[in-house]
Length: 133
Image 1 (tube, rainbow, N blue to C red):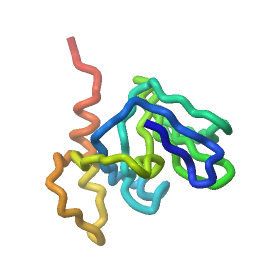
Image 2: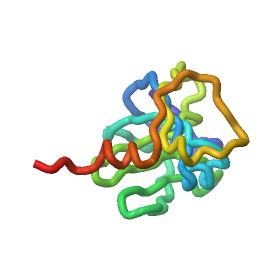
Image 3: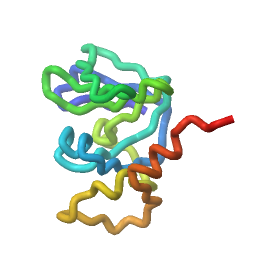
Image 4: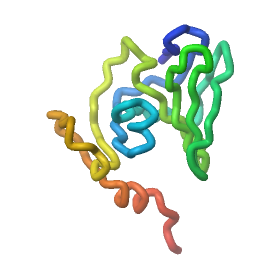
């Protein structure tokens, strides 16, 4: 699938995906003024045109955006090299909303009707924590 930022300076290419999830964490909401509509695309993502500007937002992740128009492009999970792309880049995609994370940080001023799998921040961290052997 192909998408682009608002001004077209950066094109994104990734394997086709059907699912989109929401992240309600405080950083994603500050970054996008709402939940991040996230498409998990793995590590095989190509950026054509301008280079994304990168901001390291935590020890384990960085976020990328277009320096010309400001479009939020991705959340890059460093330990797994996974790119989670902004669903808005792909205007013609037929996504299905399947999950919501950091539901415990979602503010009360919005509510979605979709029937999704919901996880708290603690559940997310527990799911991805290294397993003791």
